[in-house]
Length: 364
Image 1 (cartoon, rainbow, N blue to C red):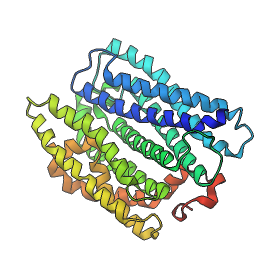
Image 2: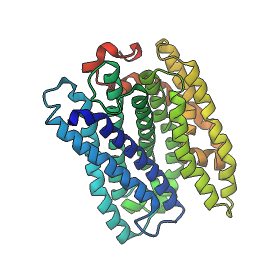
Image 3: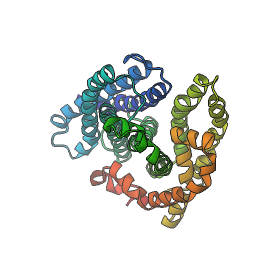
Image 4: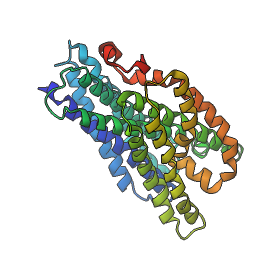
């Protein structure tokens, strides 16, 4: 019986993973704009609803691991649940910890606090687990392995992969934000304003460069795993929608009366245009093309993977546009690195032990 529920349970978990990171993006905007005066905000409600929607399926997955899948070679389909369970436990600890932190230290606008760090890592683990799970379900379906009798269709499984990879892209970007939050680091470790002054330019430039990596990896993994034109564009559109609503449209409306609101609003059309090169890449590049072409494509698409990030991109293009020429070369360099290693990233998502005969040639 539980075996028949594996796809519906993963479906709940994937939607929950996307809700977590969408709520997290909105929560950061609310904190930055000083709109948080209570713990029970709308972004927190969305985020923690997503936590429950991942944690409960993960517990079901653990049950299946020791019952209907205990001696099954297809137990690799449950790996995503186990990873997400680790993320859920981290968030169960982080939630009360975050409430206590805010009650004692205020509703700070920083990412790098102990409670936020634990929460963000948990969100990333949840997204990673759901990505592994949804990708392996799709591969198992293509390999004609039994997945039960509910919601088992190629279109639905592909939709799950698109949602999961979108969440994973935003999750990985959030890890970059966390590590580059010099104000939060100074706040948490009491390093003073001089630390922020000395490191802010470096961390900002490094953040712009590093967020090119997750997007590029996700683009090429999606191209390889899904194989059809439009999949990468769908991921970019879904990610851009979350980023634009949280970081651009909402922020611009709140800051409309200030000097920064108009600059943010004027950036929105340019931000949406960054999807166009990604769509061109999506419709031109085939996953079976030779390795040098794929690496060259990764180099070309990497700047737009960075610019579709809503946090650094709005600051760069709306307020620090003079830095763009200086950052292009480093971004292309990390795009080259992503192009060299995207197959390894893709292989982490796939259950190669079971599905090897059915994998695309580019991931062998």
